[in-house]
Image 1: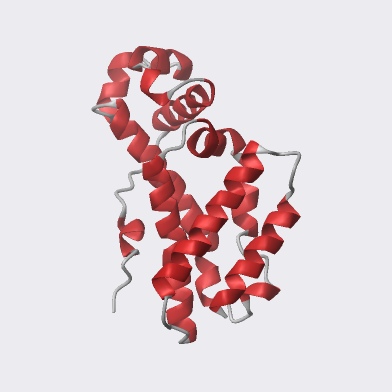
Image 2 (image 1 turned 180 degrees about the vertical axis):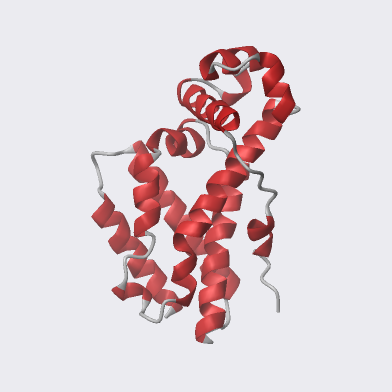
Length: 191
């Protein structure tokens, strides 16, 4: 049986050169301070130190750039946690999503923009499905499939993203250790 979340592993991903990296970073920085819909190509190119015509060599629209950014971040998140699916230890004995927290910490402004300032529903859905893909692989690998599996996956993925979102929105009210403990507690339902 194929995973219903497998599509996240097959998202279109292109190589990223220095110019694209510059455009992506400039877009993410601009989206931290203003609405994504209000970012214009001219403004983006100025922030990225790239000619407007160069933007159109790589992207047909700002939406295409945003999708490229989303897919790239999802790919990074999947890669960070791929080993989780096949770890032999129980979830409660490992630092589940610890690397994800480190990645979020490194790119706080990006995630703040996508989760808190102006929630990006497309990105959030892809991320939830990436978490569910890891959980699906883990459950299949360990032979633990059972009733309400899809519901449990949804609850765990939603809780993880809600925890990260709360942490970004309220940095002084919680810390990484609290988030890890709560995630471990919820993930224990799968063991």
